[in-house]
Length: 274
Image 1: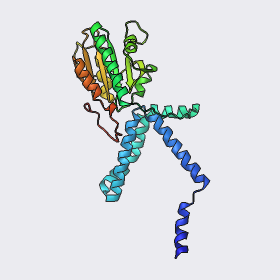
Image 2: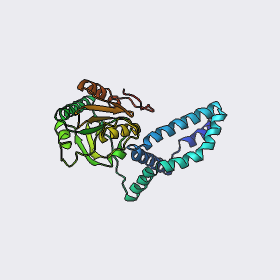
Image 3: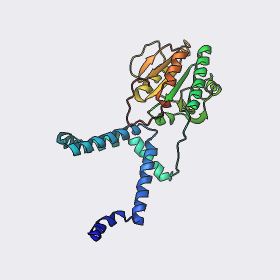
Image 4: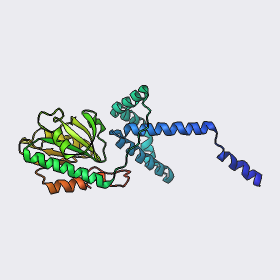
């Protein structure tokens, strides 16, 4: 009996060198795919795919035949749709493979206190620009990576400071046109080009406001606008424009944003602030 049990169990614990190599290759490929998509809209797709697989697993266990039938019929169409919609991301991945970019990058962990200090630097800069009438547009990244928007501007990766933000948006400064992207406690990029909204937001509002609404319609971020004409501060979240924001409202919005949460989100909606 013991010999029979040993004959069935022993093969399960035999791992060859080829198995270790195979696991290593698969792990590396999965890691690189994740790194390629983490700063793009494809990250949201990745989360959606995980949810669909989870639903499929539950459907198989519970024998939900209608759901399984829908998934099986939509699978081929879904793959084609993904290829069409995310052609730029797939092309980028293939190009990086061809260039041999296999470096490992590890994301730093930032303390909440540092993030709050950086936020106060942003608020002080925005308030100062409002007083002197300097136009500005700042994006604070939340759950949707702004890598595609960042690629349109000049990458900085600089520590946030009031002085640097003021210098960026100074009239006739090289980077004053376009938007600044804030990622955690770093200025990721400046002079970024944003999509304009097609929604009517008021003829008295200019390009900065249209760009702020346009980008927040597509991405989960907070857009801060300082009007050059009126010196008023406005914010845009989820495609909604809030005009004439005071310092207290701006601080409450930024400090309360989900960028400060330490939780790991599997799926989260993009409406409203947290």
